[in-house]
Length: 131
Length: 126
Image (cartoon, chains in turn yellow, green):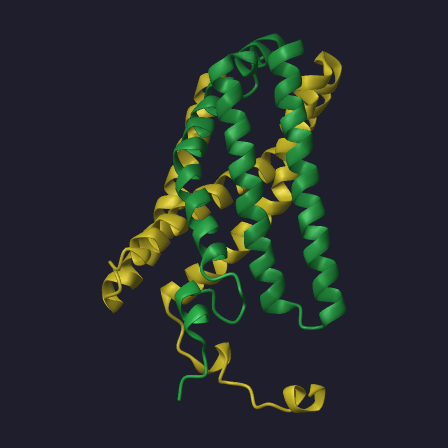
């Protein structure tokens, strides 16, 4: 059986299709999902530090406050927002709406624009509140 | 000719024997996570950079504790299912695939267990 399955012809893949926004957002949805998976370590670290006392909490806060920490958290915020907007698109499709080609492509581009805008908005509010 | 038995048809579980269960749990947790994470984003906007005492006092609030615990549970179920899909799509060698699926389950439950313990400790012991 193994030989049979290994020699099966493959269907045409990515390189043969024209680039469209929905396919780009599809793979970004999966990549952001993977990033959020790994990022739960950050959430766990923060919660455990909060449960472990002021010293640990300040250490984790310091780490998150470094430039690299802030870039990672900014990326995590964007991944979360993008994945959530992608999820909402999936729910729209699940109820049978939004399959028209041009609409689906517009929505894909819109979800990218909205995810960046919302991420910037959230960080702007956080930074303004600290001032 | 349909070779399926009437029982098989009425169960509707298909060849993988789990029917739409995976899909259903992904969607249920995703719907739950929308309001939960919106709450959490607002919470983090309010408490980012605030001193330890303020953050722990806020997390110890019963309402926030329950929301945090629910967010953790919905998240780890959702992320485990999502990673399962990625592994099944890209890992073709049987041994590696099974190993990855088991590690995925361990990682998800481990992170979830740690987070839940932290939430409960803050809620009950401060």
